[in-house]
Length: 323
Image (cartoon, rainbow, N blue to C red; front, side):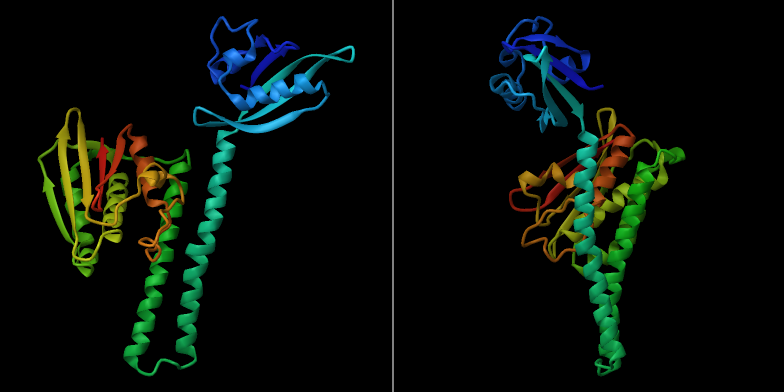
């Protein structure tokens, strides 16, 4: 699976394997041509060239990126009778390891903020009650209400982590049945009606009569729940949410539009990464785990669907799911 490329002391390609051809997109006529002409990665070229110029028996290692994948590149001299007669470069795909490392770092960062902070606040509220600082029943109830909100945030985090772990498990069993999508949408909307009304958000639903779709009922509920929760959470007071279901070609399209704070262009791809959250003044006080949209994308991919996101100039976001 590792790519291997060998050059002579003149820097011309003399040998490569199938993996190197695939990774580096080598042409069939690249043999006996200078590496600089056939390889498009400057970092790898510099590593090999450096060995040939310095004529030292050393190994160079560096992480490089090719076509959105990460590779550990090693360059070593080829020695014969004490003389360096060329160099060999190897490429090991470490994309999964890099992704795991990045996810681990993001997870630890999320734990330090999204778990530690609410726990500290809940502990502080309980201390207020135990020390008798709350003067009357109304004040005590207010403290308990605030603590409950923080506890609900933690429970949501646990639910998201469990859902993510369940999807990563290869043992997940899905019960595929014909699902009435409009019916489920209306049920979820009704469930979140109170949350929307707390921010005076108007939820408009436009549902065409569409064919049933073969899915696991829990998957579609989880998918739409995350989209609707975000549309409420990141919306402005007095805003609105428009929900559409319609046929578009061979697909059913579920679209959720909101009048919220929007998504910066540079974050529109990253919002689907685990634990990623847009960080700015508008989102600073909005609780979240950065897992909701990651779960949505995993569900969509499971059913070979597609999800698109757009954001209006004046604020608001549009999520379109095609199944």
